[in-house]
Image 1: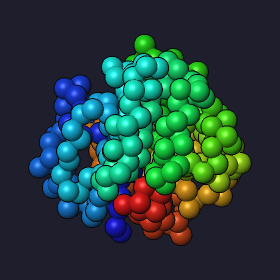
Image 2: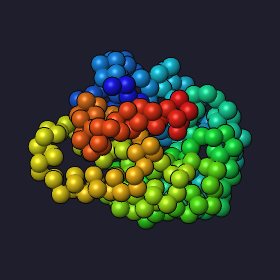
Image 3: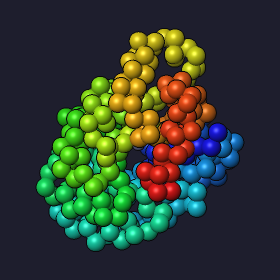
Image 4: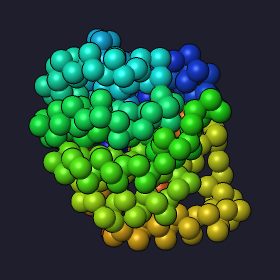
Length: 267
Ligand SMILES: [Zn+2]
């Protein structure tokens, strides 16, 4: 099965370097290339953390979303960034924009974000938003609740929004937002993290949670808008393919693992 990974991080910080070995990986281009070859992963989308002024040069098998993380974020920085963002969106290897509202502690409904949504819509490239649980205690969860996406999706119908991580653990809310808004998609990255797992044992020991996930992934009947993604290097690639393939009916694997990301991110 051909695969596109719609959500990875690439050489973004020493923190990621330290976490990679716990998932059986190494945070390097050579290792990523090797694993992609072994698992038939054709391409991946890097979620940028490093602001809009960085050069953003990646190996040829990666595309990227230009991202604003907390160290590059302020209202003024967003307002000043528009020309840079547009220059990125013109590049064929730029697949969209990435926002981190929980870490940045701002609602993505704030008016200073609106020009970004117009730009993304104009270039036909999505705005991917971190939704759901965060990696550190200093972030504020209320800003990255998936229900927040409903407002911008409704107000910017020409712009595609991606709920990263399916809003996990607020998957019921993510399902409602996906069901209502045809311009909302989701990636399934980072739902299982924390290093190596025995997937059989995980499914057995967390059967209630797993069934809950299956139920609310099924609810919007939007398998044409769900994308496989990992959050590499935080999860083991082979195990994560196994995990997601047990949540998605086989009839939808080709779409979820490959075709949807190709279409949504214009890869
Ligand atoms: Zn991520």
